[in-house]
Each structure stands twice: as structure tokens, then as C-alpha cells.
Length: 371
Image (cartoon, rainbow, N blue to C red; front, top):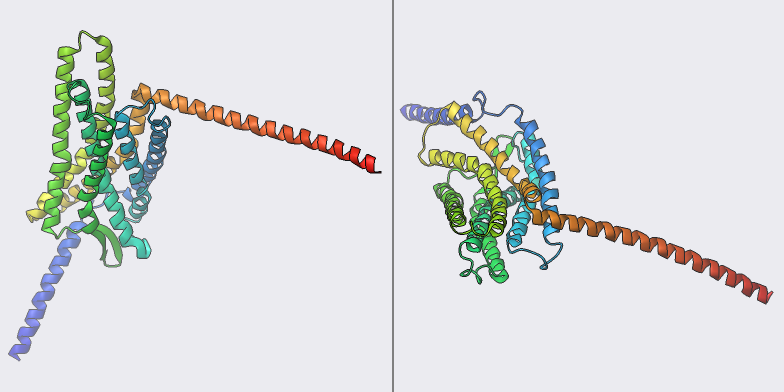
């Protein structure tokens, strides 16, 4: 009887601990008042589709304009511009998946391919984030070399070196994003499936924290140093040549706007990411309001970060005179090509009609001859 009683007590204590854990999780993630943003399952999918449409068309337009002339008439910085547009173009192709998931309150129901789509889309987002900041850092260093180290940077600013740099950026981004491919997957919570990270792995959490420092804080510091040096150099040496100073300042303004847009878009996401990872690593018991604030802040900041993928084309069009001029040339060439094609088609139909008439006349003459 004592053994049976001990068994019942042990079983009851296990059940009590289990229900406490479940109640704790439900209390913090589901039953918390305001745990979910009101209307997020409606507004967020609409915003994701808008970002997808504008980002797809805008970046495709950038690639078409910059590559329209090939190597002729191009700038070295255009190589970075094209690579940025390609990264954003590939990224926005994943947004319909997240729009569908957000419309279903985060449920990831994509059938047998759900886990693969979860890993692949998360991997693409990570590659886009890393490649964007790396390309922006390269653009800042390129501006620094073009303005401050003009004579000492002929090899570093050659087309071959820049293409090798872009290849290195893509390779490093693909490698650094591998943890998102490995530690991201579909998990079931009751009857619902969600695409989530493995927050139980201290290695992944520590690596994620290190990635924020390596792929955001350090590049931003490099960018600030480059532009601070450039501004000091322009104020010191270029006052005697207003034309050269104006050309440099115009190029700097465009690149600086792209960088500011990226930092403003991704800074809140990285701040919330650091806060959440730090609280998970330190095993802090957060209140209901704190967890709701973290979760909702991450959702909003993630959406703000996604907007960055459709901002750059607008910056190029409104601030870059060279890009706008090439866009006009491309538009005129397309218009003249269509006009030429329509003219050729009408001329061809006219010739065919004339040939047919001649053939008919000749045929009638032959018939008359044989009659």
C-alpha cells in the first residue's frame, strides 16, 4: 500500500509540474491580454503583399536600367547596385509565404513541403540581411577610396576587384546564413504548425547574438568612419574645385540615403533581437506585459525591415541623375523598338498584299494563256 501511495504521489507531482509548465507557457504566450497585435492577421498580410509587389517591380526595374548598357557607360558603384537589387528581388519572392502564414495567425500550413519552405525562406531572409549590409559597407569603402585615396586605389577600384568582392560577399552571406537553415523549422503546438527558431539551443542563441554584432554593429561603425573621413576630406581639399566637390557630394548623397534607409529599417529589428536573445540566454522570468511587448515589437520591427527591400529603387530614381538618365534612354529605346517593329510588320503586310496581287494577276494571265 505504501509503495502504491508513493507511486500515486510521484505521478501527481509529475502531473502538477507538467500542468504548471503548460500553464506558464499559455499564460505568457497565448492567454496574455494583448499578447497578439489586434488586426495583425489582416494588416500585416496586406503590407507584405504591397512590399512584394513594389519590391519585385522596383528591383526588376533597377536591374533592367543598370544592365541596359552592359559595361558601356556604367559606373563601378553600379555593380553593387545590381547585386543589392538581386538580393532584394530574391527576398521579396518569399513574402507571399509569410503573408499567408500571418493571415492565419502564424500558422504554417503548406503541406508536406512546409518544413522545406520554412527553412528555405528563413535562409533567404538571412542571406538578404547579411548581403545588404555587406554590400552597403563595400559601397561606403568604395566612396572612401574614390574620394580620399584616389591615386592609391586604382587596383582596388578596378572592375575585376569589385566583381571578386561581390562574389566574396555572396559566399560569406550564404555561409553565415546556414544556422537559419539548420535551426529553423516547423514545430507543432497542439493542432497548429509554426515556422520558428530553436530557442532551446544556447549555441544558436549565442551565434545569433554574435551575428548581430558582426553583421550590423561592426559594418555600421565602418560606414560611419568612412563617411566621417570623406566629409572631413571634402571640407579640407575640395573647396578649390566646386565642380568636383559637387560631383562627389551627389554620389555620396545617394549612397548615404541608401545606408540611412537600411539602418533605420533594420535597427529596431536588431535591438529587439538582442533583447529577446539576452533574456533567453539569462533565463529571466518575464512578465506577461514584457513578453507581449517583445513579441509585438519584433513583429512590427520585422515588417519595417522588410520595407527596406522596396525603398532603394525609389532612392535611385529620385536622387541619382545618372540612373534617371539611363532610365529615360531605356524607355526611349523600348519605344523606338516597338515603333520600328510595328513599322516593319505593316511594311511586311503591305509587301505581302502587293505580292499577292501581282501573283493573282500573273495567274490570271497564265490562265488566259492556257485557255
